[in-house]
Length: 500
Image (cartoon, rainbow, N blue to C red; front, side, top):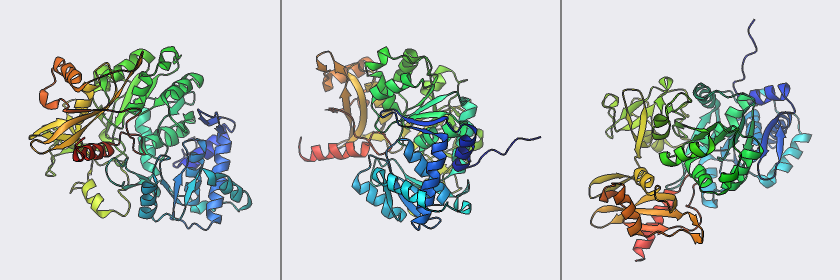
């Protein structure tokens, strides 16, 4: 006799968990300690759905969500699903220009913020339940979020839930999870990495998840120890910040077994340091908000593959390589632009035919924005971002590779390399650097000292930075938590124009 059919939407998953472990912990916010059980998760999402219907939002209408990354944002997202209202996920850090753009682009009828939540729940208590037929199915448009917005105003990515259930299936094959795991997602909930590690996989497994209204490396390290986290998800910048924090030296992280990272090229030396200092294994999936996942590393991958490549391609994703003219050059092994046609692809960009035309190949494969190689083992290695190439006198320079080398200097905590305009060479390398804290304050670094270090490592002169900008505090971030390189390019252009 077969068992019950597995849920295919988050609403079904949360309902199942509420029945099976009503008092089990679904979420805890690390800073405040605010918790939400599975029963509370289910009940609050029901109230949100009732309130949205009572407010007159038609099925398929759009509502913006800009709620802090605590437990409640997840209940609101499931409530939107139950009401058949498409959520427009907006990062808590998004500025007014980005918010206005996203609401206008999607035709959103309202914007839900933190201060709206209590009124929404109150309305839900007095309103009739949302009709079950309003709820979205797994293949319907359910959610819209933005690209990272590192250059210009963001595009809106269309999500159906089936893609994230497929992503979860691939994740379980790479590193099996269970209800005994405790997840910690340090990512913003509305974005791809955060959707997988905060909204979908922990719930599908039935495990608890630690989230942050405001990430700091010290808060994250404390949470890993306090809650006995076994699976951490963090972008490279976040785990590097934790490595740079003295708090890591004294933390007991014996339960931590896996750190998933990604969202940008992983600095291998720092990833190795993370493994050596924490005893956990660093894994990653390679993909994007649009494609989902093309390849990944697993618990069975050797260390070289895990830390220096994007892992083995996933057969179901039918990964190919294309040259800049749109030709399939998979057989050559690249470097070329990866593309895929499998179950984790999004539905494209919302109401943006021009952007969609650039997203797909002529034969329907969805493109990444990187250059990669594919070896005879089926291992994909990212060698640069197509929009992250610095062209100096006709020489293509990989900004991520420059960053990897600069990051080996002992005074460097964080680095971003960008192109700065040059009337002779076209572009030169400019490095924005956050320095490590020293015994008497910040460490010190000059351009000559940095380039002497690179010379000692055998880095070719064309890849040396020709300008060094020391940043106090942190590098600018996009809503998705990545370094906002567009802002850095604007900054260096403005400085050059002003003669500074």
